Length: 249
Image 1 (cartoon, rainbow, N blue to C red):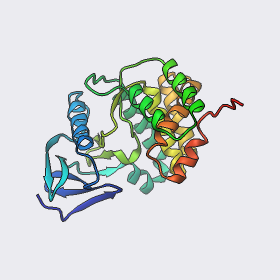
Image 2 (image 1 turned 135 degrees about the vertical axis):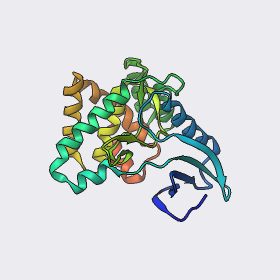
Image 3 (image 1 turned 60 degrees about the vertical axis):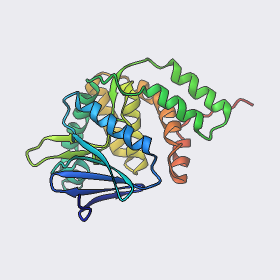
Image 4 (image 1 turned 90 degrees about the vertical axis):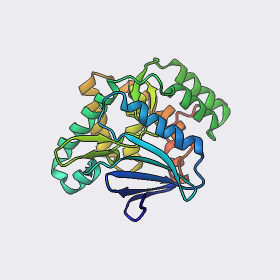
């Protein structure tokens, strides 16, 4: 395996290309169980028949855990609409349709979205009264078992030269309520300073799926609190503004 062709660098991992393989090499600080769980998630989602890179093996390179997957030739959806701003609506339509397709599947071997969010809220820095309110709201939401990506954003969609969309990065995949995943995507756009696109995206998704806007909005404080656990200080401040803090005094 050669590590001389860097595709991208992220906070705790570097992705390389070696022929027809993509090597996601994790830093030493990344726990083994997290890496293995990501590979397992990806392998389980393969069973749905969605276009995703297939896991080939999990190895260590110089003591670093590495997931070896198919390399997908193409450009991310982010790259495409930055290069073709006039096609934003067309790409956004494709993006929403792809998310709806993902959520049409079930993958019952994955962890439960509600369980994951419950744990994240418990681990957040919000006061106990706020965490209680968030837990109560979470438990009141309908229990679904739809496939949720967990980080569905344009940079995780690769369009091949023949126009086939592939979805990458299944580290956060769960089964649960689709609207929670939509709320997560909405917040990702906002965190990246794309509020106008976020609003257009949310309206398009709700129109296509006949989902009430208020229903998705009810998930946003829950998702924001969950996401705040791993966010940087700037993100945490923004996400805190989305959490419905009730005055109990």
